[in-house]
Amino acid sequence: MPEEIGRYQKITLLGKGGMGEVWEATDSHTGRTVALKLLTSAALLDPELRERFLREMRLAAEIENPYVVAVYDFAATPSPYIAMRLIRGITLAEEIRTAPLDPARAVDIVQQIASALASAHAKGLRHRDVKPSNIMLERGHRQGRDHAYLFDWGIAHRIDTADPEITRGGQIVGTPSYIAPERLLGTRSDHRADIYSLAVVLYQALTGKLPFGDTGRPFPLRAHLFDPPRALPPSIPPALRKVVEKGLAKDPDERYSSAGEFGDEACAALNPSAPSRSWQSREVVWPSVGGVTGTAAGAVLAAGGMLDPVSALWALPALAAAGAFLGWGIRPPEPPAGPGDATRLIGPGTVV
Image (cartoon, rainbow, N blue to C red; front, side, top):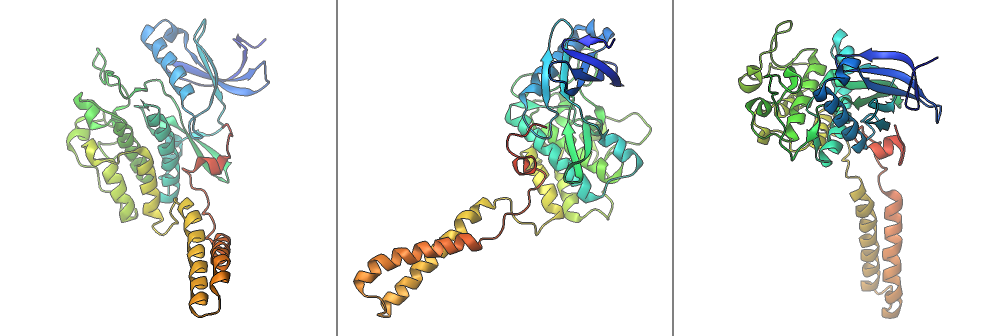
């Protein structure tokens, strides 16, 4: 008989690390198949690992974004678990292990993760471990393209609270290859440290390599502090190279101020002539142009003696309204939703 954890029946072990296990499981209440994350028996006995797991459980449940794995249920006792949406895909780390991604695909994925980070930052949270192995790709979920998910919020914490970047044992909190310089210096860091990490991810997705350090050797932390990133290959468009370089700035004040801005700039670097996302403004501009045109036409008719003063009192407003109506009808169509425009891609109220 399958082992039960709360209301969940374990089916198949999907993965295991030093801290936790992920099982495919069935919810006995709803019949839904879920990914059930559990602590290993050894981790259950470690107060620090147990607290990290409980933190992930609480923080991941706070973030609502189509690019964050949805948390269905969680429990702290007697055996902590997190029941999440089961994603059948591969990690970005697995995908780029064979070959770099073409720029359009790399930017599409990074823009989605930027959206996930923007939602977390808006909640006052930062991830602190953005890297390819924490990005899951589900092929075909979004109109035949990748749907990217950012997961593993185990070392996330609130931006406005002090939390050590280096443990008492001298270990770095996070993955060395992706850590922002200010975190290594022990100075106060904020959401822009996540943007730095995402810029490293974008660089790696484009090249298959890290911007610093030598493959196959221990990563030199000093590289984040002092070394410039390796130049991206000439095949990468110059505008996109500038976006990556700005994201990798040593000084957080020289980076993008928000994850959303970073994602949008990366997209714009590949599509400089793409319609602006502020299409809503045209919903007002075009009817307004039509209204002004209609009013002007009425004024010309009145000035030419084709409308007497009494007729003009009702004709001018009528022409203005007609012009506005025509302007509404001929306005440019709404551009297709981009990766960061979640409500149009997924649909209002949809849970993924």
